[in-house]
Length: 275
Image 1: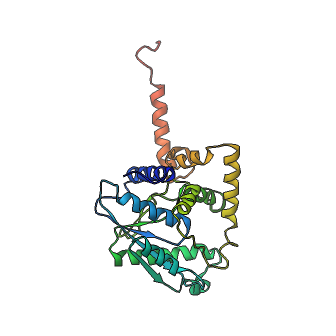
Image 2: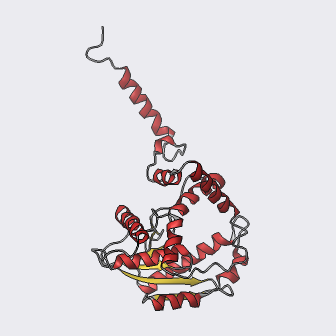
Image 3: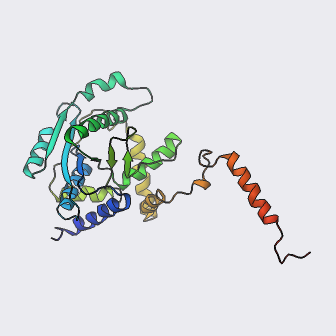
């Protein structure tokens, strides 16, 4: 069975590589795909559906949408699309939008708090639907942007992993689009005729200025230096801990004996050294 288009074949190759590199899916897995209605989650669900019919291993899918309770959110479109394509799905209605203002800390944005609360709902739903993995639609651009956001604005050197085990070790989050670009996800969702649903939160766009600035920066860099985003993604898998300043990675008390030991080795005369 061949792929329908060149784009689908290219995306399938990247997702398959991510699955193999990071051991994202095993035989018998039941994958719960978080579907927001955006291009990325639709592209992920469609691609995993394609691979589930071609892969040498067996795994099943269930799409889950967490409705935050915002008025005019088109959860009915998500339900109808899943039904038309034969995808098992579940829509969970919540009041997240109503309680955000009461729980929001001064240092948080509604988007970050909403994401955390939605993640908690996803963990609960994973247990209820019997999922062994939770798949999210973060793509390569998300990984790179998160790296720069943390570097520039949070003072920490981190992005996100392709595979994450929750603190209680009960849930495994996977991101199979790690090698795929945002443009590929957008084009694939459009190519497949999937309906794109935007977030209905009235402040969502206003409070993502930092991320928008990072997007513009990366766009400018990619134009000036083609391949720079791919280089940054590669860097996330090519870390040199000894060349960083984190003393947890390079404890000074441990490094000093090592340096002294190396120095003494260098100072020991060799067998052919002059007397």
